[in-house]
Length: 149
Image (cartoon, rainbow, N blue to C red):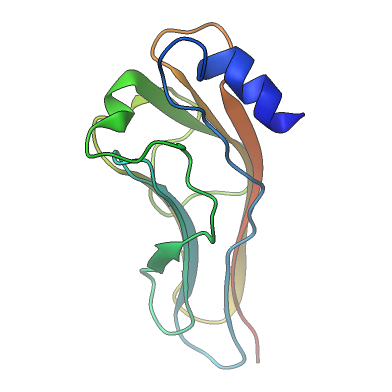
């Protein structure tokens, strides 16, 4: 069902790649005072990464197993697309929220804490063909950074 809607909305039949992203919940946590972080990243080349760190305010990103945002990864696949992360609650540490961004460069959004405390951001990641009226696909995202005693 999701694949069919991605083909109809933003890829497949029109010569553009099929867009297919999935819900993600990256988490950075520790049980002592200190920094931790979590985030998501979309690359211009079609890769979708999640990341976390249990010891830094900058997450380390890795591939989401088999969940690339484009079924056709090549260096400039993002040039035909734009993305958006709509925050429904919380505050991002890095990344532009609630606006369409050209995918002519990599895009990332992160949360972090420098010591005891927590930062949680809930939102929706959206990808579409440049200027299209409908999304090619969406994903629910929960990013958590938490340092507890």
